[in-house]
Image (cartoon, rainbow, N blue to C red; front, side, top):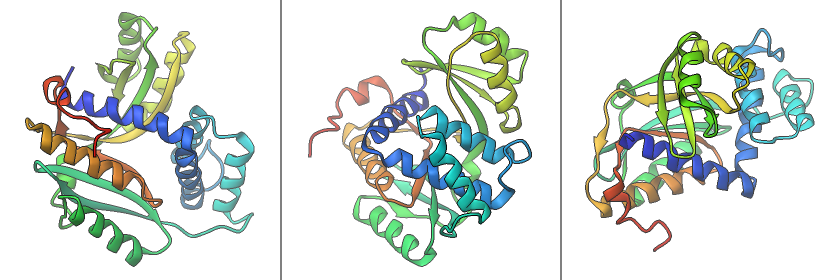
Length: 252
């Protein structure tokens, strides 16, 4: 398993914990609302809304809650006008971060993100200094019970570029424009799909070989992720099992 796969596994586990606390629901609802505002309320003609709608359903957000978010986005119900902003920064160990936020107050959010970074060993970077190290991809997460060869064969015929072992699931990577069709093909083949989405993947990774730096980096990401406006955090960190063995995420 690659180090970045280890990072993705940590994110997946944290996502499950967030769902239990209700934090993930709020983020997903906001994403649905923004997608509807920017491209209209019909998922068939708004691919971004279709992806966000499906992501919300994958995470058990009630259908009526999603539909109300769509109506807020289209103006049928009163809602807040959120702005999509991506902050670029660095975490301990020289790890690059992309921080996606949805905010109703750019100045407030920017100040808070800068403060969280600086107080926890990170720093805010100039626009463009980090983003070039990432590329947008589509991902489809498949149940671990699925046969690897079958997932690979169906995937190859439907735009898949890579298949990664993420311990608890298989992750299939594709171009963002292929994610909806790839998911449909896997489901049609009887393969259990857990989630599909678009994400930012690093073109190169930065190895963090020190457990202290690794812990500080993960702590910073956790603190950023708890901010109400932060929707997702992408990193180019590479963590191997030997480093993670020395990291106690529950210790102060």
